Image 1 (cartoon, rainbow, N blue to C red):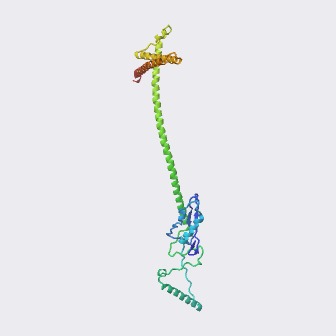
Image 2: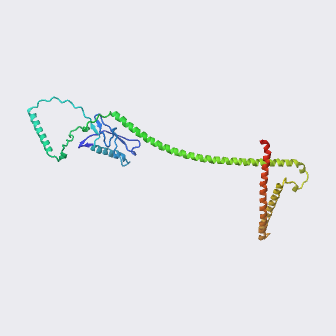
Image 3: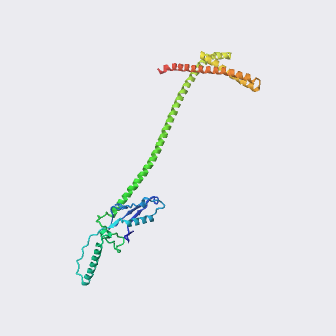
Length: 338
């Protein structure tokens, strides 16, 4: 950098992260043993970490290290972040009596200095009436900065500064990792919550299907009990009519209803089947042209109405028989239950 037209070197370390160049690097000012960091610097904190607008607005690929170094040189040239330590005053050697020639030169130099001071003192408009201190000499040592006008306490050891910088960087990295881990955990938790809701929905569906299967099982058990009851009735009838089967019996006398409901059911079923046969014969005759269409339609309408009444009566009789059979089964099961 250039400060008051004199070139100085500022020791800076630039750390390249794993995400570089997508993410801006980290720059630290590392003072030597005879340098200290200027307090209250706008771009360098007490630990030496550099924060400039170029790093804050880092955009790849327009941002690069060359431009970063140029910005650092420009900003540090305007306001240096380091100062050299003030060394302890060394004892002055005892003065030797000047010679005649040296005395004349000193008097001449002293007179020129007084004349210069007098001329500045008589001009109150120049620099607000104050004397501007001279800038650093051109022959100032390279790689060293001008001493601070104020007394600044001694800085920490460079190893301590590096350790503090490393700790700060580690804390920032840990904070970033915690944020990323939190985001990943939130996404995973959302997925788990969605899976839990889906599992609850499937659980409800399974419970509903299980209830339906239990209801169906109960219905099948009832039908099984009804079939067993009818089987017992048929077996008892066969035992009672085993001798009659050997003799010649009219087919109409083989089946005899046991009660009025059975007789009514037998009659309705026989009438329904007979009408079904008649309708089949009428359809065949109509296809062959043996019967007029108007007569076919009239007979079909009449027979269909009669068949509907027989089927409705059979349905009512079947419901009544079911109720009577359930009551009979309950009466049979009551002694075992008690």
